[in-house]
Image 1 (tube, rainbow, N blue to C red):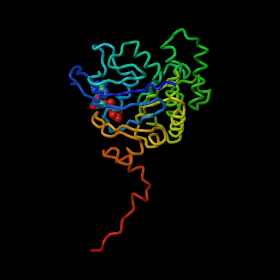
Image 2: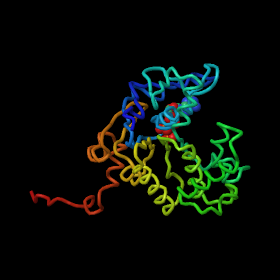
Image 3: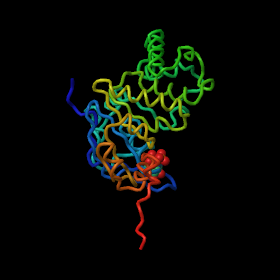
Image 4: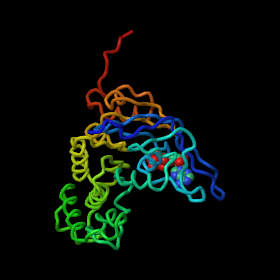
Length: 281
Ligand SMILES: Nc1ncnc2c1ncn2[C@@H]1O[C@H](COP(=O)(O)OP(=O)(O)OP(=O)(O)O)[C@@H](O)[C@H]1O
């Protein structure tokens, strides 16, 4: 087993350069953390705090290879993912990062290809890497992945529009896991799905946690996800880290109003309504 950390983020700053009339935007400032094999970190913070930028950069998906292309730039520090520096990454490094890191983007269900069957959607990352990969083997792999995300094989030949939102989310998760990644980056994996499917997705994430050496970065403000599927958490505000530590500690000692709001939701109702005896004077 390797003892190399899955991810090392050191003083990372990320900026979206100015484009046309839009000014440049610093999305992350001085973010540092380390993710060991087997660990799962939750990323939380209010809207616009840089969570999705962090997720896509760590997944090797955001960064353009040429400065003329759109996308965020590492403007300070670095992130090393599976041993590859993202700041110095060349095409080959990014190919290895995207092979080793499964990515479930925000609103993943809507990123499925509408003209492809479920089977072809799940197998897409395989053919993006090797267009000559045997179709039968890819189909078998897609079927295995559907089983992993607890979907019946009857959906293999269906199209995304024929599925419920929750089923589509699980197909997207199957696609993110089809190459057998050692790291999963999931951006709001339970957003927009109903409560029963949400529990199934959380169960899946919790199961992945038990796989030896599997690590993940999960952006979420869903307390069940944070409590059941993460070990530690980082809190972002305006791109800066404002909280970090074991998930229980972050939620128990919130220094940021966003986390305070989440933590309050954790308290049992009787504690929130509890009144201390008042002095009569
Ligand atoms: N493609 C882009 N070009 C320019 N600026 C961007 C781009 N994407 C995001 N930003 C800016 O970067 C900052 C961080 O955005 P990001 O989407 O990472 O935050 P977030 O915490 O994920 O927000 P949300 O919870 O709403 O998804 C914001 O100020 C946002 O406006």
